[in-house]
Image 1 (tube, rainbow, N blue to C red):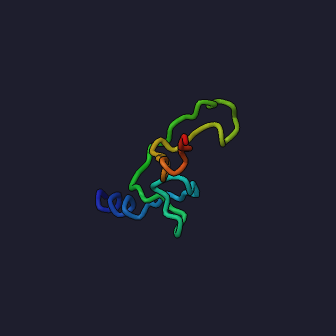
Image 2 (image 1 turned 135 degrees about the horizontal axis):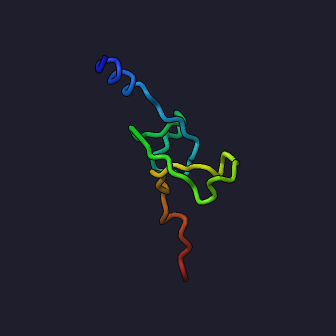
Image 3 (image 1 turned 60 degrees about the vertical axis):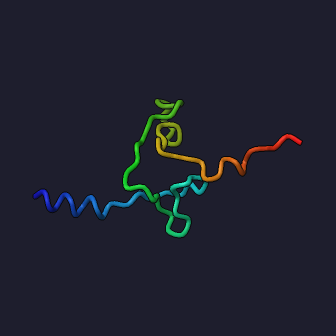
Length: 71
């Protein structure tokens, strides 16, 4: 029975379309992490799906590219 569980875990994928995340595989629309943590967002309990949860492992792909330099 333990063998079946291990096989299932290996086949699990995390579909993701958040292109700004460093873990996002643009070509396959998947998360490259083996697991993620789903966390409640600040607007939890609103009833709107987009307000209820978020990926706790999100990391901005290139945060320095988005910074405005003072000149």
